[in-house]
Length: 190
Image (cartoon, rainbow, N blue to C red; front, side, top):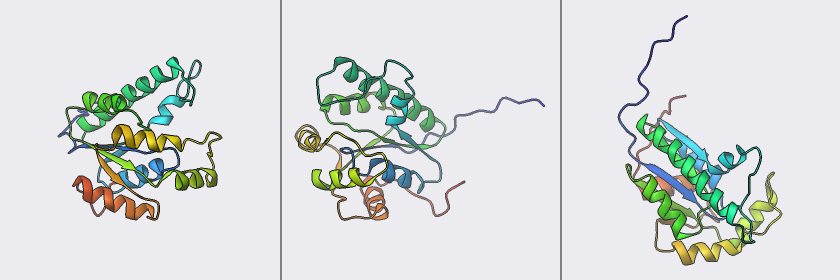
């Protein structure tokens, strides 16, 4: 059996979405549902890239940790490389990551500059995010609700903010589609 070389790239995708919010805000669930609404899309869960580190990995923590901070940018860089590859192949990448600081957001904007990057912040509020976190299988032991105030301070003037506390996943996806203007299709390819 021979495998002929097939061109991978085609017309670039119309844009990319960076979906952020504090842990428990619904990023992963909404990102997967949003990607499912496009004809060609990929969900890039940035935490999954962190999990690829077999030894030496440092997860973000409330305590100062220079290595964990470095790895936040490492995983963002890897997410952007992957997103760029998908964009060039015609797939809309939907990245989900906890982006708290302006420098982190600026890194995404600078690295994914070749395509319109739609920033969407899910903001159900710290109490709702904590409630959701405690109800899910991958519940976190650390209460990250103070990140809500930090995000509002650092990123409050950037992107589209959606209070999804009382919304279903579908309602949140509809709000994102409306805010970004990205076109969905009736029948996604599968």
